[in-house]
Image 1: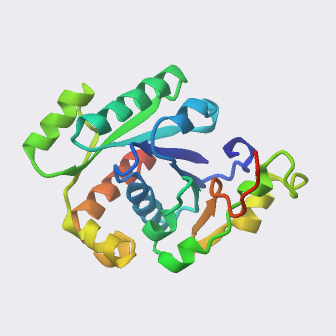
Image 2: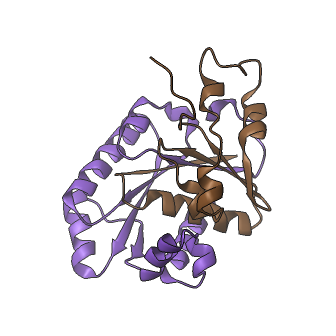
Length: 131
Length: 104
């Protein structure tokens, strides 16, 4: 699908893939410029992340960004590094504003635009698009 | 054009990250097309569409099947037909949810 889209200058396409590894496993690597892998500080999440990163490397997706999510402190960050084997590129804190937005059925950007988690995703945007 | 895919274990927060990222990039002045490729699509909520509007979105999936009714359309035309505006420079299209169920 992505390969058939018009290559409009400046356009950004963001794909929210299904959970797990199958969409990357089955996907065509030429369609993606950057793979963002979101991981929580738990072995099950890190195992999926590890497989995604390995798959992406094998498929030649050279830009791979690891986002550690719901990180409550040093222990969580250490857990991600320990389980995944690499340090994350971006660390999103365990931010109650995100859960509050979820409960409200709203985007965190609208519910609490100044929240720490939104601030970190803003940094991710800069990292991805070289602002 | 930059194509970014967001992946992770289900429940890891990837949809929230994808949606918030898309909103922030659009607010920086870029044209953003978001593609919800999850079978249980929720990206619209993280984009700010609200629960009702998100669950009311019609999926482009059946149009994209080999025997789908719109094979004569370009992918750009499919996006135009099924994408919903989620902000001034932000669109979302669902591509995996089935709206109708059939054998096979």
